[in-house]
Structure formats: C-alpha cells, structure tokens
Image 1 (tube, one colour):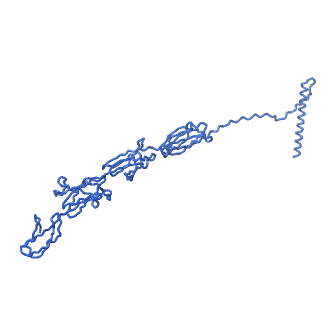
Image 2 (tube, rainbow, N blue to C red):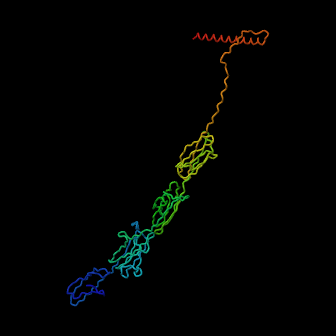
Image 3 (cartoon, rainbow, N blue to C red):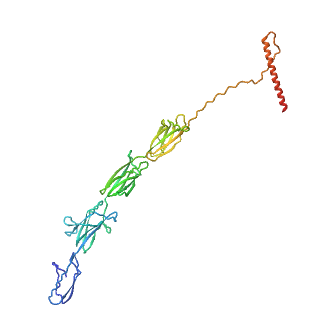
Length: 413
C-alpha cells in the first residue's frame, strides 16, 4: 500500500484476525520507519487508525584541505560556499541556486557543514589559503542517506588539494667593472626561518634560476666565482603571485693584491735602486714592468692568478739575476713581499810592470898586455900602466885561487 497525496493510506476488507503493519519504503527524502504496528480486526466494519512517523534524511558535507605537493600538510584559512540545487536541474547556477552558507573549519584543515537535508548541493571554494591557488571548480554532492557524511575531494583518496602559488627568481652574476658574465657563483635561498630551500651555481650565461613557492626569502652567495671576492650580503625578495618572475642583479669584485720586490746588495744588504723587473703571466706574456725606486723597492698591483717575476736589468755595477720566480695572488688585499739580492761585479786590479834587469858581463875582462913599457917623460902613460899592472895582479890572484879550489874539489871527487 502506498500513501496518497494527503500522506494517508488504508487497507480495506481486512479479514478478522491479528496483523502487523510495517513500512516497506519511506517517502523520498525521509528515513524509513522501523516501527511495527500490531492491529487486530475483531468485528465487521471496524476502522483501526495507525500513525506512522517518518523523519527527514539529514546529512553533512565535509572536506580536508591539503597542500598538493605535501598532502600531509593540512591547510587552514580556506572559505567554501555550499549551494542547494534549488531548481533541481543538477547544474550550478549562482543566480538560481540558493547559497546556504560556508563550511566551518572544525579542525585544522577540516571543513564541515551539517544539517543538510536530502538532496543535491554544490560546493565551491570562495577563497584559498594564503599562498595557494584557488580551485575554481564546482563540486556536486548528494545527501541520500540519513546521518551521512559526504566527503568532497578533488583528488580521490587524498583530499581537497590546492596548488601552491609559485614564482621564479633568476640571479644574474657579473663582474662589477667589465660586466662580464660570471660562471660558478654558488647561491643559497633561505626562508624566513633561515632554512635553506634551494641551492645552485651560475652557468655559462652567468645566471641561475630557482622556482619557489609563495613567501619571503633571502638569497646569498656562498661560493664566489674563481678569482673573485665573496659577496656574503643577503638580498631579500618575495614571491606573491603565481607565475611571477623576479630578476636580481649581483656583481663581484675581482681579487686584487700586489707584489713588492726589494733589491739589496748580496754582501752589504744595501738597498739598490734602478733594478729593472718584469712580471709575466702563465702564458709567458709580459704584463707589467718597472724599476726599483731610491729605497730599492718596486710594486706591482695584480689580480688573482699565478705570475712570474724576473730581473731584466741590474743596477749599475751589479750582476743580473735573470731567473724567473713564481708567485700567486689568491686573497683580496694580499701582499707578496720578495727580497732579491745582487752580487757586485768585481773590478780587475792592473798588473805592475816588472823592474828592468841590470846587465852582467858574461866574460871576465882580460888584462890588457903590451910589449911596450911606459915611455919616459909621459906621466899619463905611466899612471895608466900602473893601474893596469895592479888589475892584472889582482886578476891573477883570483884566477889562481879559483884554480886551486877547483883542483881540491876534483880531488875530493
């Protein structure tokens, strides 16, 4: 038996006896009654009244809001509206379908609306949590069973997910003087709590890019390109819109140092001016040239790298030390100090001329002899003869002595 338009029903011509009346099916939108109504027909034309009560089907809608990238992260602060399918056409129409209100966040990331009667409804996100994209889809839900809790999901088995707002930051690294693009600069991105969220190095174009979620960040260089001073200053930026592109220009200063060459005398340690020096790069090219000043020093300002210094001209009176010596500039402000010695050129002492030797006779002069005696009356001749006579006598004695000694020696032999 089915109830009529007045919600009444009747059984006619029921024979004498005892009966149980139960509801087999409830009206649409109502809960079927489990009541059992016992009746007894005891006389003819008897009318027995039964009051059967049905309760409306009432259910709930619930959803769990999660981060699409980290589903364990529940999202608070979302706003969801619920609309009744007023015209019962199954299609959402904001002008025709009645807005019943918004879901209540009953716990972190969990939203619910209770007291929904049997029927179809539409759930729509009105406002996304901060930092997330709004899901503009409309989701249809139906309350068909009493006390039913209908879960709304846009990812089955996971929950109602929102995609995070993301932007892109690109860092351009250049030389602060030349504007040259710098390769190998290391950058680290940190969040507001100082946690590192991304790291990377500039490539051939001198750039490095990071895709980041909504939020505030700082970027700092943790490794400078080779030959450059590290820039540790943090730069702040913020991602606020989806698809946002942020460009940050950062420059580095080259590492610069100097070499100071002091020239001294190898023996006296006296400082020597006017010594000529050249600086060579690793390719053997001369890149600097200079001479020691009055204090014996010469300085060369250089950038990061490996070099060689060599003396090409010695101070006057000194030997040139033409050997090449290697050195490196590795730190900003570095001073390489070198002391280089020179040996003085020794002066040659001129030789003194030998004294002339005296001539010595090789023969014993003979005593002049004459057969003639001195002539009487010639005094000069007499004197001359007398001298000659004396010399002859002396010579004779010398010869005699020499002869005697010679004979003795011969005998001894």
